Image (tube, rainbow, N blue to C red):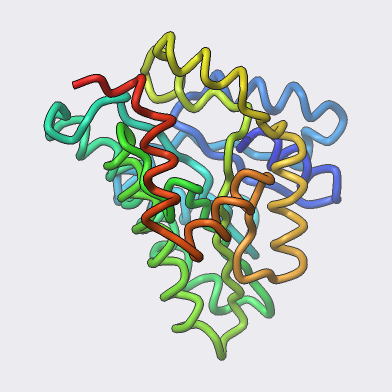
Length: 252
């Protein structure tokens, strides 16, 4: 989804700074940009390292002079197991990438963004950030932290030039499982066949459209929209339904 965000922004004439921990992935994105690759610059950054993120700001400003917005899209999931079976190492990795990475990027770039005539921060949470998914409880907690962090930031910056949007994707056809270093359980693969997933191209379009229209929140996909309503009307029933769908993955 991050790649499609870059390509969609380029199609609108934006100059884009793309960051990733994997340089090969960045170069693939540049190649796909075709003639517009002159408008994209890349930096290899570990967003879980605060010093590296601070160095990114210096390098970005040295190359471009200014930055008018950031989209925090990086994220990983956890193994499909219960909290009791998760190691602290895995828990910390998920929280570091999903929450602290978003925090470091936002806090590092915010002082500069406040000096711009107009700026925007988009933070990508997840449907799992407002709806509990057994077997992804720590992932959900990290995305719930992103949700409330972003909403709180929106209130704090209400009278400034910096606009804030939080995004809740549902099922998107991405490489998040592979990028998280996980194998997809057989049951999950079978279950996914019955779930309509949104293309990352369409997801990127919806996210950028939400940013351009200064939306408070963007629900990406019909599943996210439906479960958002269901969970607000009857959170216990919504949680029970999702738990039922995950039962085959969590037999213990």
